[in-house]
Image (cartoon, rainbow, N blue to C red; front, side, top):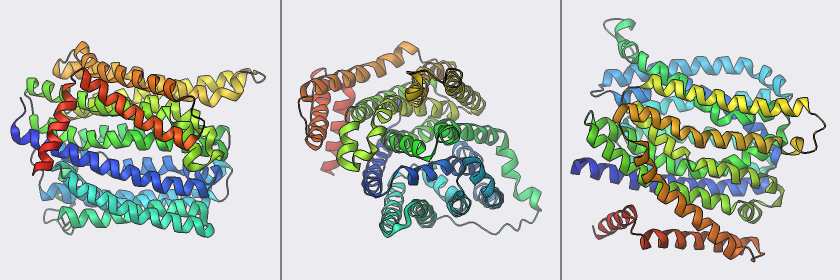
Amino acid sequence: MLTTDLKTKAARGFLWGALNNGAMQVLNAVFGIVLARKLDQADYGLIGMLTIFTLVANSLQDSGFVTALTNKRNATHHDYNAVFWFNIGVSFILYVLFFCCAPLIAYIYHEPILTNLSRYYFAGFFIASFSIVPRAILFRQIKQRELAIMGLISLIISGTVGIIMAYNGMAYWGLATQTITFNLMVSILSWVLSGWNPSLPTPKGGWWTFFAPIREMFSFSSKMLITNIINQVNNNIFSVVLGLLYNKNVVGTYTQANKWNTMGASTITGMVQGVAQPTFVEVGDDLERLRRAFSKMLRFTSFVSFPVMFCLALVAPEFIVTLIKEKWLPSAHLMQILCIGGAFLPIATLYFNLIISRGKSDVYMWNVIAQGCAILGAILMIHGIEFLIPHSSFLIPHSVTLMVLAYVLIVILWTGIWHRFLYQEIRYPFLSALKDMLPFLLTAGVTMLITWFATRWIESPPILLIVRILMATLIYLGLLWLFGAKILRECIGYLMKRSDK
């Protein structure tokens, strides 16, 4: 069994993680709706083309040391300080490199404006490097409350800046400034809330001694670095492929669809990510406790993920028409497909957090690389068929949809592969995992089916949106209560205890 202190810490982490990610995504949605109503596909497409470069740069500047610090049992100021200065140096070099490569990026995408835009936009990841170690300290200590405050304040300020610029005709410059402002606020607040300050890199024993923690963690962190880069490529491969094969309008349509899918999945993933790995590390090598902890987290993740993402898929068309105008309606069917796959992303996050906590960064790395190769192979195969059969009346109009379908199928099927490696670590049977997940998956699926049939006669998109969300919520919770779902009663009990304090 988990100790009472660890249970309380994990429950508090989940609660603040839920409040943090929920509030963050609500605010993100509000700002996203306002901006989407003002901007068009081309504006989002330009930023979408650059996103993967920033995310890869973020992975390079992190270099996997944040995860390594979290896994290190007794991290010291020397460890944090070495990682801090290492990250600053790497980030500066990367920014100079990307600054020089900006004309090449513009040439590849055939968009001259990307030269100046990318040089401005990429400044965000250099600013973000100052927050990496302070955020790692807050994360390691499961201080979800502080992370929530930091994220909300940063999002409110950056979102306001983005909207003001967009409504003053600065379009994609407003989107870029929003990202830079967010990173700046996170850097400032993470220092204030963590209470940690670096010391100057003037080691008595020389640079070799100062950066000794980097060498000690390199074996683990290098694998995490490669994995994080592949993960970013996996998650943003469509922005690159569509930008190269089609145009910025197609990229913008996909970016808008994926944006809302990512918001939903990130809300749940953030809850899991903020608690899972620190909890697994604290449990240690007690396999029975690990199995119990994993099982409970898997049930909770499934309890939240399937209904939220399936409901988002259900209401996608009326959501887009009601909130961000009909000009974005082509994004709706892509959003529906992505949200089905998005329901499995928080579950995959839980799986690989346990694998990482066991020190198996190499397993994590090779599994993510294999998944990335499968996704890229499927995309290239579909495009290859389109190229070889240029006059196909069916494939050409639906090639992007087929690519997204292939991606989602791979994400869902890969859950079984993640489980194979998890079983090697804690001997948790696949049938037990199915028992944890299937009740919530089936209940969510049945709920959406009933809701769709019961509301398809409603013609007004705003009314349909509200009715479907309310009905789906009531039916899902009602079915779980009727069948005596333990996780629902535990959540209600915990929230009632919190309200009594």
